Amino acid sequence: MSSGEPLDIVIVGGGTAGWMVGTALVSGLRPNQARVRLVESDDIATVGVGEATIPAMRDYNRFVGIDEVEMLRATNGTFKLGIEFLDWGFQGSNYHHPFGVHGQAMGGAAFHQQWNRARLAGHDFDIEEFSYAIAASRADRFEFPNPDPSLIESSYSYAYHFDASLYAKFLRKVAEGRGLKRTEGKVVAVNRDGLSGDVASITLASGEVVKGDFFVDCTGFRGLLIGQTLESPFEDWSHWLPCDRAWAVPCARGGRLTPFTRSTAREAGWIWRIPLQHRSGNGYVYSSAHISDDEAAAVLMGQLDGEALDEPRQIRFKAGRRTASWTRNVMAAGLASGFLEPLESTSIYLVQAAVMNLLKLFPGKRVEPALVDEFNRRIDREYDRVRDFLILHYHANTRTDAPLWKQCREMEIPDSLKQKLELFRRRGHAPSHRDGLFSLHSWTSLLLGQGVTPEGYDRLADNVPLSQALAEMERQRAAITRRVPLMPSHADFVARHCAVP
Ligand code: FAD
Image (cartoon, rainbow, N blue to C red; front, side, top):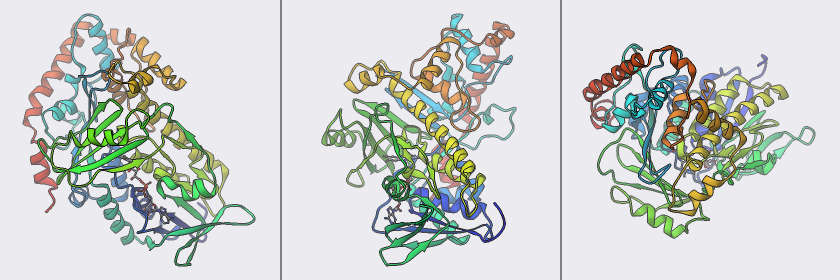
């Protein structure tokens, strides 16, 4: 950014997205670079869900300098080693998407290639036995990964479950402490510059006019600036991701404090269970074309672990994204920029991706098209990759119980996903993105978990004699089996490190 007057940035909306963006901007920019103001309305509720995260969240917290333990205490948080998928693929199936590797690479080939080579040679191991994160999840154990990469207990990562509304409050304190100015007020008009067409100011119900050089639209599904004002088109993906509603309800925590989110496929969608310290979050994400609202609510309420703590609340949505999340002098983040169902807990990550890319491509007083184009290219790529990952959960199934699953199995999928599936079926090659989601291990856990098995393998695996590969696999499995029982239980770890005082 060129020197001169600081940029006046106005964030509209104070949900998780607004406060994440605000906190990152006041943490990453100096006062002579930007003045940041956030406008939110007490009259318009936030979406209030969004309790599960992925490990990238830790990078965000580190960037803004949040103390993890302090944050978990403030948000009733727990730890997350991955997601358990029940009845996805076929009824009775159970697999984990772990935050960690499935075994260590050997001879220049990924571990799952050696595993597949062994499988094709008649050694039928369960690949999940080589994941430390899965073994710890199944045993309800947790501790921080060991930083020594030579140890098996370094081979995983973790994320959090937390109360999203408490997280936004926590961030507000941090951001205001660093100079962000908050205004309570309902935006009643968005005013554009007569010449350039850019957004020049917003008018609040109080009559106050808030001017800005750059605006961040965090108004949720409304998309007040990006959609309603600038008319950035919304690309509809509901033909691939047909779920369009959710019921959400908290309940008293019963049973285990699992260090993972549970996702159970049902006849018209899927049910989440997220364990927090003081309660569990639950929800049924469903396709309204395949079940009535009343039936869906009854299914959700009928399977709670403990007493419901509230009435179920319905949320409606449509899968898709803005074709340009940054248009003119407005960038959208959170639900204003798009929606992908929470099957892999990616929405908060997409907010993080938006604000980190905004910081990297930070505009001057006049918006430069090259920066805008690059930002939109990066955000589109993130959305497209997550979209393909989510579609695969629905598409690769052999369920016979309900029409939704037949429809998803038979639907035409994006070419980008077709190509990924074909490559995996032929040689076991899965995507591996270092510049965003998802890692090789995430893709292999999903593909194998959903029942897609490769008929061939990477020939580099042959560089290691099979007997040697089998011995090494056995060594890795034994190390996990030995080490995991020494970990504290997740409940004890939470009680010791971050229990709410
Ligand atoms: P909102 O929370 O809707 O906030 C909008 C803000 O804009 C509010 O502060 C409101 O007051 C303000 N506003 C709107 N209009 C005006 C106006 N005219 N004037 C002033 N202010 C205005 N994400 C995850 O990462 N993990 C999950 O597990 C997860 N689960 C989810 C489950 C469901 C069913 C849904 C629907 C979403 C889930 N998400 C999840 C997504 C996550 O909840 C959102 O990405 C996140 O909460 C961000 O929301 P937001 O801040 O964009 O919008």
